Length: 186
Image (tube, rainbow, N blue to C red; front, side, top):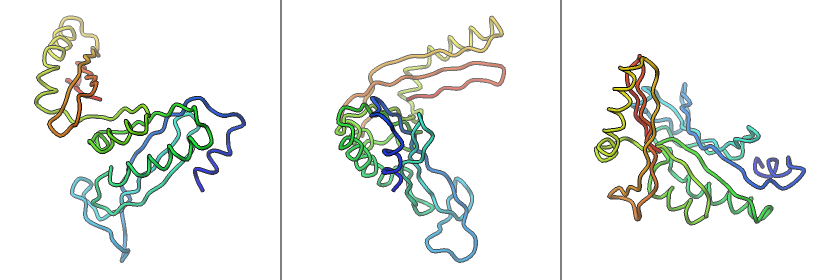
């Protein structure tokens, strides 16, 4: 129903759409079925997952997961359904999917590549990514110490984690500011 309403909301076929996929915690109360205790959130909960359109702010798909489910559980199937449905209406559309590091897992990369859609997922910083961005972080710190101005620097490279079938393009952001440092990868 959400997808049908989304498609019907366009007067003309779009050429490109960007979708955001996000889970969020939904605390349970009382005697509901299948709530589980989630250690990160510190509560009994469900874990709804929502796909929204960045251009229109419309909800396009919703999935209710059990409280301890991995955020990406079944997301590859949801994305395949969404992409195939949209391409039936608009065969030439470019589609992009964005998600946090909970979606930065091999089956999501492979699904997006098979569907021929653009994607950007957060990556957890591991020892290899930290080593490959160490000099950039040090440069950001030194420049901030010298100028007192917030620094935000970027580095890009091809990287293949041990669980990946192929190398993928990674961008690392290194920040240095009065509150400390911040290093993230996509």
